[in-house]
Length: 327
Image 1 (cartoon, rainbow, N blue to C red):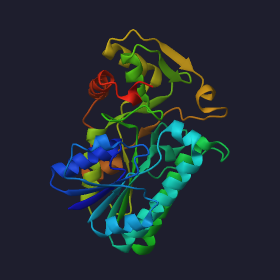
Image 2: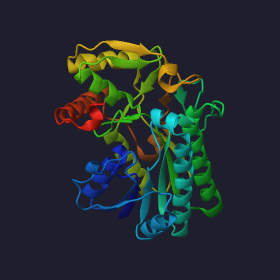
Image 3: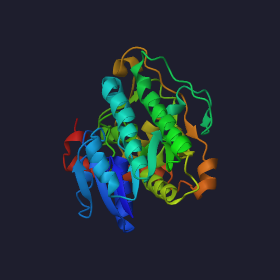
Image 4: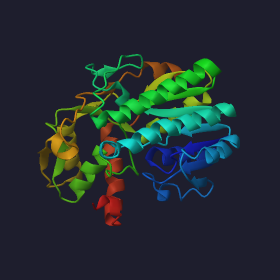
């Protein structure tokens, strides 16, 4: 197969590129390096990488024409970045996906789009299914523009399937973590790990009782590939995640223990970080029944395994004084 991965120099994208190369696929990457890093893929000389944006329709058209399938991972991500740059978030996420849909439909290339658990918004349920209603906050709170932009991506993709039978599948990722993820834009586990290793306070936002389920990138990537290989999933949306839940307070303490750190936990009100009126969901856990039936998906890596892998990766980067881990 000849595969295009947009956002292929990013955290998840680079792991996907590795998996595709390892199975013998020819991989092309389109990434503007706004949040990705070329270092994530430079160990893969088989890859052809174009440094440009999905907003450049001419480049996208040329690349899509020469491949068999497209994995669209490129997006503006990270709570801090979304809150600080809402225009960039909305334009990149909506227009970028629109361009990818137009060109993959033009050449009839199967397309996988990564969406997010954020689309469930402020729903009061603790376990979310793909057909649940969504509750999104008001438009003057920019925190919700990421969720809303990804909702539009989903609506548009499913419209292409309905009207044009364009082969597309959508996945909602729940807190994917692993090596190469940085805390630069608010990702919690690499942030906590770096703080613990540096002997700094672990900064827990809010009261620390909010819970999340973390999924290892090495479990997510095979699911993306399996969905792309299946024709039975076209026009469908699937959760991908883990069902082991942990509070941010407990997560911080567990990282302190596993790094043998003497750091303390420091609680910081949301408004001090993101400004007044910031809203967060208390709990977020995926229902995995649908994807389990579709491809037999089961997350294999437990939280302890995830933490140990991330700790080892961040430790190496701290020792090498990688700039993003020292700020």
